[in-house]
Image 1 (cartoon, rainbow, N blue to C red):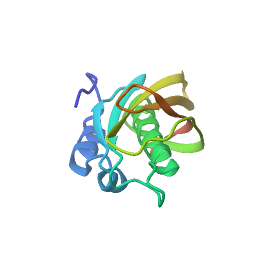
Image 2 (image 1 turned 180 degrees about the horizontal axis):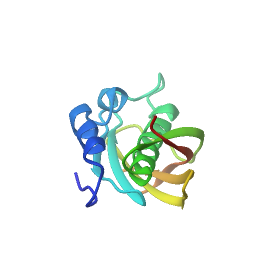
Image 3 (image 1 turned 45 degrees about the horizontal axis):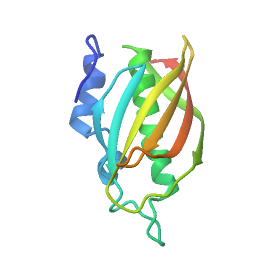
Image 4 (image 1 turned 90 degrees about the vertical axis):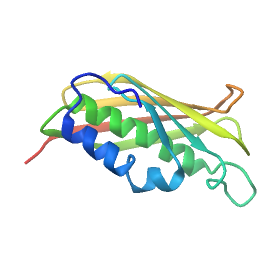
Length: 141
């Protein structure tokens, strides 16, 4: 996994030791690149399908939220944390096999709010969904 220089060591340890969190591990999410402005991850379709065999729409959202949350936490820096306050998704194409790759890019990196847009693509490069997430940045107590 590619991580930025100066990443909060405590956040990096949490990411590495937990594999990105329990849900990310269950869904097979693999983080490839992490930074506040751009993050990339991939996820298998197998194990994340809905009853008719399509990648579950909620799986797209989990992938987008995982990247948006981590990217916002990186931007927040030491002594601060990110809390999701809004998320939405538009699903444009179904996928039934292989892997999807998500690229998360910052739209706003502010002092108190971060907004990221994540595009999920299939192995052919087709856009399958777009997830937009806003996080509130808070100080640890």
